[in-house]
Length: 88
Image (cartoon, rainbow, N blue to C red; front, side, top):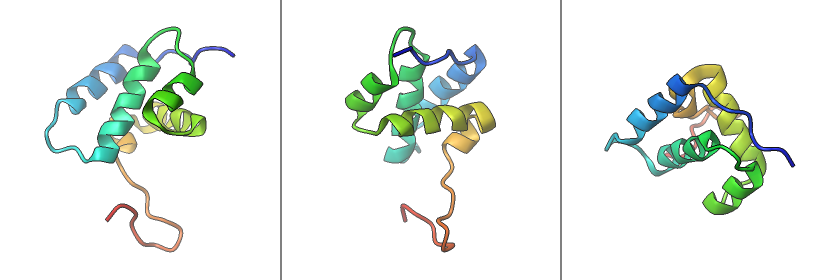
């Protein structure tokens, strides 16, 4: 299995800055920590998933969210299909 493709340095810096914030919810901190692990070289999604107790697919989902919309998208919660918000 191959390692995850690298992230842009600016993306990693933005994640590091945001992770120092004291106003993060637990799920937001988890997402940021996943991205920091993705940023490390020579690590596989399976290893990150096992370490952080999430699925391999979730690792890729978080990475894609960061690449598509930056930290803002990564730290947002989308409403469920029925219109209610998760995590309330």
